[in-house]
Image (cartoon, rainbow, N blue to C red; front, side):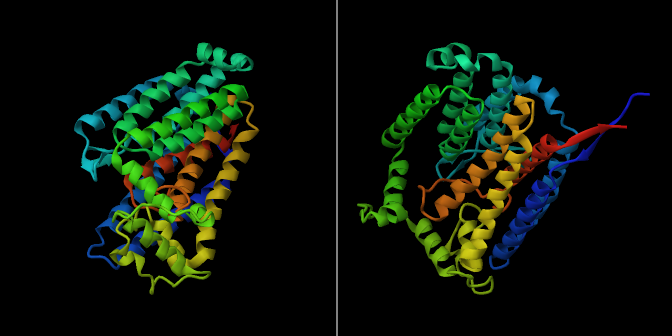
Length: 378
């Protein structure tokens, strides 16, 4: 009789923090929806909450990472096709085309692309592990050129969707994976230099709204204020960031309480998505905001602890990369709310309203639990 394998142990801390963030998100959507004209967003979020738990369970119990790694390239091609499909059939929302509607569900392939790229990098670096010592710029170009070509195709497609934030999050994550894999520093520094020049060119030569966002950021940035630098921006598109900062500063140490919060009363149009952290800061104060930030930091630390000592380089890089993806996502959203970085459309994982992001991020947590698991035969 063939022995069965069961999961004897896994990182309970990751699951606990995930559930805590999910319940905070559910409460915040109820809190915001309760003062608006319709509760439909909360009902949808509750539905996605249930589907996300199912997504986590499937990734945790049924996905065999060592088997699916052989299909990583196939997943990459499907992701590229979905990104192309978005450009052809996607819905234009506020000048950007980021999602495609399939079976009455809006799917955002850029979120999926970030996960697939992490698994692809982990698989490719593990497969070419013996060549890593020769990963100086010329050797990297010769032996690891697929790690340049495939992300470049995906990044260009996402850029054409006018969605800049996934490039920042994914770029930071993938560079971190290269560092963990011990790719030569000279190669990594060259990549960072090229990316920096590319970002400057995109901002300077790209659509006008990007340079305008930089001017708005310059006007409200905490760093610029500390250096007494003044912005020349005098437009009217700074409403969101201005109201977000008002909400955050109103919370002070202990918050105004949910009953007295004003930002969610349509003062912040994107309160349920991009600026939900500002509402948390207003109603629960500095301590409440710090608690939420601490949960993301703790989740990030646990993902490193559960993955770093894996003997399998693929699982090690995949686990840490997936943890970084969520962490950088959260930091970008929080940074925007605090005017620490320029405004960009990215949600707060597990807390912001959104179906695809909730499903994909929950699937990611399922994979992290899967990687952390100890299996035994009986």
